[in-house]
Image (cartoon, rainbow, N blue to C red; front, side):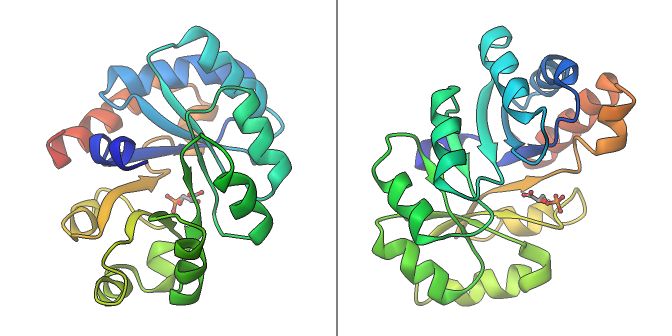
Length: 206
Ligand code: 3PG
């Protein structure tokens, strides 16, 4: 997980409502300079959308998100996800992820959740929902007791605050839906998505 997050400070969080949107969406992100994406398993189209991207856009680095149980974890592995993200952590999910070779980012937002994840051997976490639980201040407070933990901060992050997060020493990357807002996807505004991806890339200098 370390290499993935290190090389990709911004991870677009994507909701696919129609399978047909998956490939042009991935292509727009890549054209804008963001080859990595987390496709949330929140819609019926998500699994087929990921499969389409895996098949037709080989340069995409694709992960599944909103993975809430072992079944969704196993499906994600089976369809070729290169990483897996959850919004929170359960023992069932941590156990199946521990036994898997696919990099996993368990969701945490408190010291106790973090301690449980560390107990399972994880050191990289999704910090979610970042802004709602204390954002930068909470992340700074976690640095002392949990210096080994690194985060992908997600939830309420956009162009206005992305650099504040990336400047923290325990934040390796941020996730967010601002680049692939659902109205843009619904209206197939691939050029706009490409532009927003490009803006994000130039802001963080990658
Ligand atoms: C997620 O699923 O990771 C978050 O909902 C993304 O958060 P955002 O929509 O506030 O960027």
